[in-house]
Length: 551
Image (cartoon, rainbow, N blue to C red; front, side, top):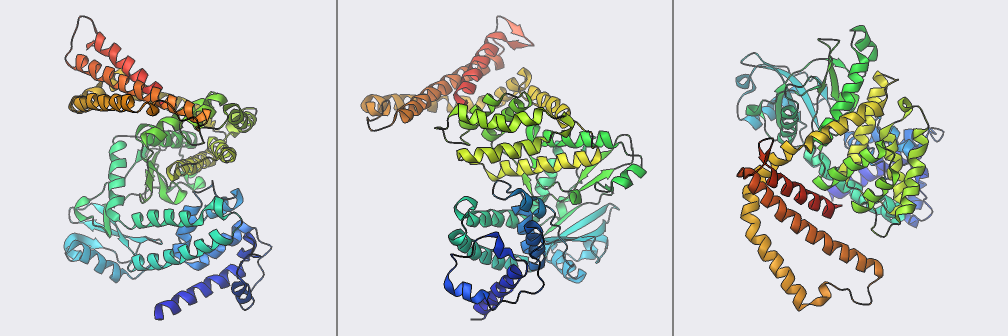
């Protein structure tokens, strides 16, 4: 009974804020059930804010609802495939402005997590936090060996509060799905579930510490990006301890200028960091807003980025990474037909999509950009416009790809803030080409083949058995290779293509295994770069067949 009363009061509070900020104008209320329409008449309105832009009204309402809703708005701002641009831009301005919880509570959480008194773990611990956000807050500390550290502590009771608010959001989402005119396209319940997954991941400090540790390893000895060291000995699920870093806020342009920082070089490095994280490492910081970035200006002529807050880190599947990199190259080269073909091959749009129609749509997005000065072109905006146009062709993308697009927009916006004249294309294209050239170099491919050789040899008998079983089934049931007459011509072509791809993949795998064996055994008679030429030829042939089957 008490729980139901609390939920009713929370819904009433939300209803008051919705009416105060006129959020009911964001969707049609004509189809709402009669009791809800009747109840709205009793909700006080307060100050009329209807003259404010709708995006601003939504942002202010979420801020008044509290930290969980602010976090929801932040994550929702990444779903530009679902939101109008004005609302997505406004939600991107949301910042966590949450009062800190008492330092004594933080001390108790740390002691419970580490099983030791705070004074035994740290030489000093400041109960006054450096920063406080919706999920956790950060306290400065010093280790007994003299190293400066920060301690990130998850808010007490946040798990229960999140669960209550998310359950309530799901209830609201179900109503929105039923009564919003655009409910079928926006899929509010799926959006809330995505938020649920992301935000509960952020509660796990060990997960965040692992993200930071991997990023640090990827950029070891790099002058482009510095990742603070994680002190694993003191990291638990609700507590994370890492190196304390200092620098200039990236958003303080005047401060950077006052320190003589080379802003043009810093802007170019930001673009390079993004492409390196995505295409070289396939692990990128997906929350790169100015509040999470500092600049080490110790050497103003050679400034370095410092990243913080690693709760949201994303990666792509190998398949999506291949197709997104090929899309980027095709766009750089203005090859619109290639972009359209890649969208179809990747399965982002239905296989029945007409290639020429999609090519024409891509051209309408790309061509206007290439008629402008290149220092005015935003690749992130171009990617966003491309995804928007492709929605007409029933585009379906994974959240990671949308995070990629949002991160690219953030990085490009940051680059233009630092250097308004930066030519994104001239910086990004050679970076991407160099990364892919290195990834696909003969030495790297042979090294990867050697690493995978034991697994391939172990699986070789299984491949033989699978081929035998497949051919036996096809012989017993010819319909596997032919379609019933009721199938359409498109389905017949699709199955035929799938069969060809399977054969190509099997043949390519067999040739690659043979080539790797010859290369590993250094079998002559001819050698190139110290490797067996026959082995290299077989590897190239196998790789070509596998690549052809994937395309």
